[in-house]
Length: 447
View 1 (spheres, one colour):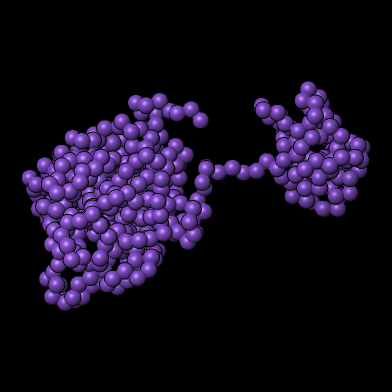
View 2: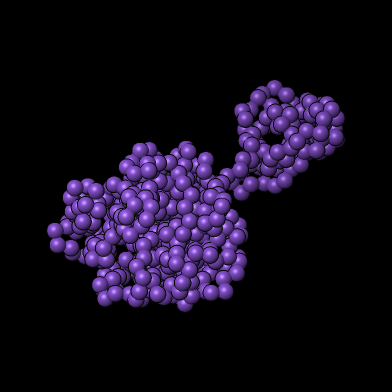
């Protein structure tokens, strides 16, 4: 609000008296700046007294350290005060929010991010970081074009060696685009046809969907980057391709594939029954040795997580799924093999109780970018991978073992029952990032 000139202090008192008697006008907070800082407090006291004499509800609240006097005023009183002698400016004491506040239209549907009981508390973590500088590799079905990914994707790779399953006419190549994993009756041992899942696109959105677009969602680490790595296509993928992709994403050498710098964390929303194979364990151990954390979905088989790979491989952060009410999701694998839990959705009749993220709208091939609700440990794991990206952004030198320790130590007690075992509890992004900031090796940059 700008300052007006002309009215003396007595005129101010008369101007506010009529308004105060006529209406119980709502008050707001205003910061008043005077031309004489030394006399400001005296002037503020005199103004308050003059208003009180006329029945005004105005209050002088306090002096600001940087200069200025804080008042509680009606809008009419503020206008009158702005015109008073000695006042050089008056400003509304506006509400502030963390930089780049949530404006995405689908945010309220992302209960898993912010629900006070069962959400992961992402907005608290964003006070320190939104993931800038961190890189996540999503090893999945690849990725489709989507507005949520504008500026979010780094060059990836297609590790699917079966050209027929890949549906791109080639074996391995530098295009990780998802060509669709739809099936016909009889394919993959199934009796019925299935539409394309666009699974990798959904997982990627959970990790890094960019903030500030409409309509849109927000990823757990919206300023991190994703390296999309295609390891699954029609009927799934091969263990050998997944293992090579783990090595490559973590900075290792793979014959015939250009090398890249290690990513901070690999997300594996995939599973194969049985013990952790030597192939998978070697790839994971090498990745961890190069400083890359590995997060894996516990699986949706309603069995012990220790019987499903790669979630049961030593060194992996294994993630179980919680339903909308905070209890263990009925489909989630469980038990001693689980490290932590995250929201995965209820997989019931209400889609809004599941996890909303980005997909393509095509039944087979790509058509248009849309959003859909999915449920599963596949949706829980990328929330943890996104949190690891926030941790690495806050402290680039945090080690892979320390990452697991912080996730476990800062997990919240489960909001609902999990008698079969859901690990250390529900991940808490805010508490975890705060702990990493306090313990980090690098000093906090000065603002």
